[in-house]
Image (tube, rainbow, N blue to C red; front, side, top):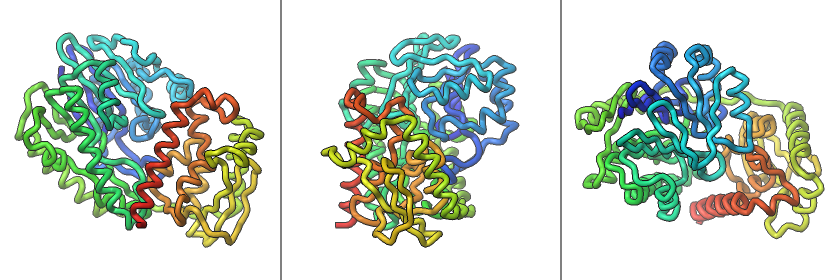
Length: 445
């Protein structure tokens, strides 16, 4: 079995006549003008790559793994060659419906069930809200692709070990990939970077790979508003420095490199030099910029947002939760659009969006607020691209509890009486908000 690195979280795993491609994002920005690849893969190279591909697997819907541009540009090749796509079977059918709509064969994967993909056996396991990981087995090798799953403690790693067994090769993310405070909060980012390396230690200790391939972090925060988030991000050499005497090998790979079971120090040295040049070139590029949205466009986007929210959730339950829930949800918040010099009072259950002079909870560009309202995945995107700032203590947590209900809706969960039957999702949400608030408070103390 061979592993060819293509880009970011995309690898081509080959066994005999079977070639499985994962998570193809090769060009263009992601997360609403927030991320860019360190290097892009030209379309002609992608087209030639697809001549070798027999199967395709997607981990989850985030645009650095599920790239609509890839399918629009190369869908004809996928259809012509009859390349089937494997994706987790979940209540949210947006990705599945898109794939079917493109005329691409889709195999939805029940979590924990084994599926034959030519000479490989694939088992998809659920992780957290959206994500999934895949166990890839041949007759004598086992690759475990964690991409950016939250496998960050022994309990979670043991769960995966019990489900998938030990692996020969582990593919895993090596740096943080979301908002970590404001420019002054470098300590949070340094801790997040260290945590990612600690995660690799836990994963390797429990899953016992002989090889760990760092990937899924070959990106850069590339907006004028989030460039500072790069200041503590890990690079491949940081992984090597963290594990100088590890029981596992760490081959660093650049696009086109192939790992065939033998670790090559020359390949790693060449890849490190390649990525050093890629980081330097990326730092010299002009950042992405937002375009101002006037207040009337924000009002119209808010109306569309509330129409969606009321259609997918129990508005009466939202109003009652706003008044009586012990966990404060749907409280009114104030968002400052600093490019407009305006602040807006937002009350979702009551459908209120109006200008105010009250102190803001968050500050962001008007295009970011427009994007949050315009798309059901808007708030999720905002937390990843990091183009926001907290303006008063607890502001981020309040905003998340006020306007992020569509994160639940995208998981097929409605806000209403039935939410009590989703305790795991409630717990994950509250834990994440509590952790983020703690980090922000530490930075200000």
